[in-house]
Length: 112
Image 1 (spheres, helix red, strand yellow):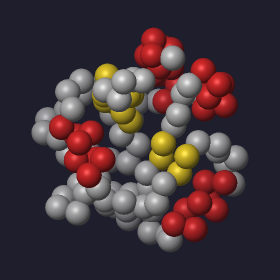
Image 2 (tube, one colour; image 1 turned 60 degrees about the vertical axis):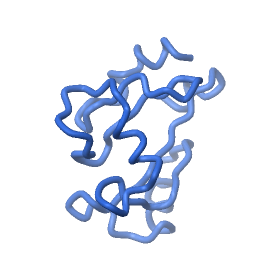
Image 3 (cartoon, one colour; image 1 turned 90 degrees about the vertical axis):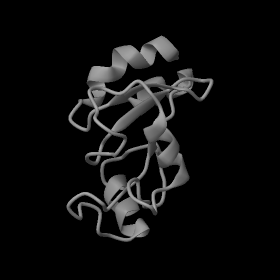
Image 4 (cartoon, helix red, strand yellow; image 1 turned 30 degrees about the vertical axis):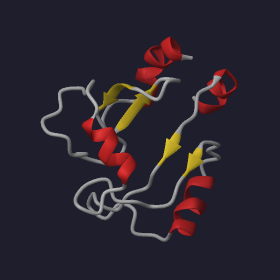
C-alpha cells in the first residue's frame, strides 16, 4: 500500500514494541534486518513502549484521541493497532490489530 500511494502523500510509520508476548525481543538493528527481508519501504522507528508509564509521548497522545473501533479504555491491546491521521494531524480513525491493512484502503483514499 505504501508503494501504491506514497506519491499521493501516504506515509506509513511503524513502531516496534515488545510489550505484547515478547514478539519483538530483538535489537533495533535485528528488527530492521527482519523487516527489510520483506522489502518494506515505509518508515521504521526504534522500538518503544506504547502502554504504561514508559509509553512514548506520541502513543500517549494517540490513545487519547477519539474515533476508535469498539475500544474500551485507551490502552493498545496488541501489536498492529493502526491509526489513520489526516494531513492536519488529526486522528480520523483507529483500527483494531486484527483489521487487515488493505481493508482500510477505502478510508485512506478519502484523505489523500
